[in-house]
Length: 307
Image 1 (spheres, rainbow, N blue to C red):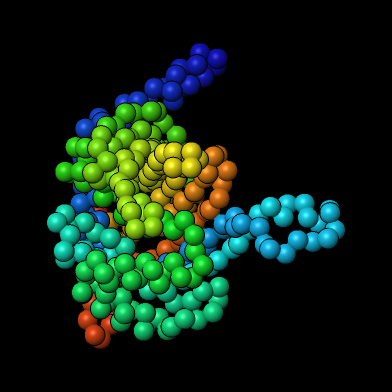
Image 2 (image 1 turned 180 degrees about the horizontal axis):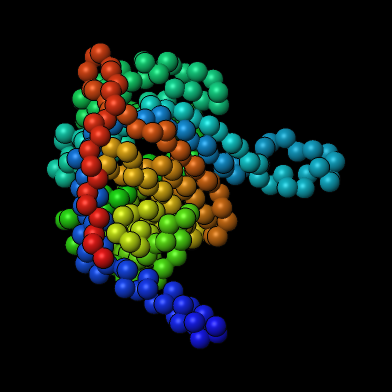
């Protein structure tokens, strides 16, 4: 009996090694999924809920009770923003990269406009697709009392498209689990800042190279989660770190869509802002004056990589 158990245990240990596809096939599947998302993203729409938790400067009010003053150095502010959410391409951008577009529906449970009005405004913004329209949308978004806004993380999978992946260094790390899925873990790092995160500081902007971890399903290379982070020292000598985890799900329509994004902004190792984005299932969006929704045509997902 002991010898049988020993052999059975040995088979369990080595079988996943043979089940895993080669790295080049895994990366080919990741690039394929990124390309399919690129093609379908401008056609889809959903509702986004952002919950932001941020440490704000202390209030001017100082309690007389000394014990009550404990912890008054900072205060936690929580905001909830619900928006109609889709993707578009800026017509005047040379790279024609996809970007997020959103129109706010409610702030902390208070209605700002109806979903129908938001969809019409979103449609108009995507059709005009110029940089000014998107900046106005971002400014309106920020006016809702948000700080350290993080956008466009829902599309981070596009960094692994067939062309962009050539500018990324990828190193296998081992295996882990994403929920109930056995996953291969890959470290990645951009070799150039040209395709990195765009940060705005007042009127100035700078691009910074990203790095992180990619989790793909061990059996066929389907992307499950992308982690991305960057660190730098600001002019005031503070260490700034932005870290995000993006969860993807394979929809019934045959392509990946973002399910959630968790972004954290840290200063000198202290968590200052946490942004949690959640997305409802995506629908087909017809960008016209008469906004209509239809079910996305059910298409067969790409064939999995054979073991």
